[in-house]
Length: 214
Image 1: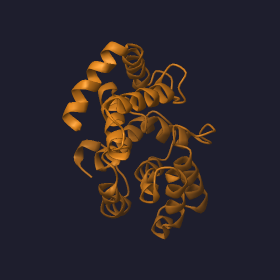
Image 2: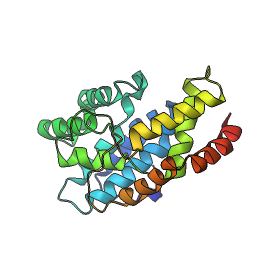
Image 3: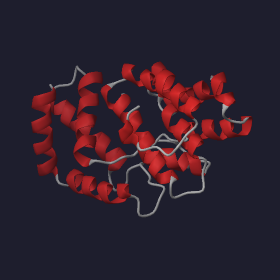
């Protein structure tokens, strides 16, 4: 972990454990979920925690573990991540059984497509932090994911898949939800929606990135 995370003072043994044993797991995931992603989620989570009555070490650990279940695939990663957190006996050095259960639930609840709202404030924090919305990055990573996982698609197929995903997740009737009023994400989401709604601009961005990524 690097200094740019600006985390508040944490138990040094916990911080060292997370840095050495958990963060490196992300180096083996797809390009949208590598070390820079978990560092971003940690940073966003800790910024939210400053404004709320929560345990900063719990917030930090939840953010660090939220996607570790990608080691077993994307579909159930939120559930596997929670199982891995609960199975990690090292964490009992710093957290009670009750705290660990709350943390596992928060990890389970972070997924944007979840069929229920986060069960706790901790779940809302990591869910919001995981939704860092930078329009160009979202569009580029959506295309990138398609190129990596659907190589059989032609150019038109990749555009249609990208557009469908953007509408389903980020569109005005999409399933993505934000959990805090006045979050910086709200303004960025509106900018992304304006791009999604303007097919001319969306196609221009697709053409630019398809050439560079393909």
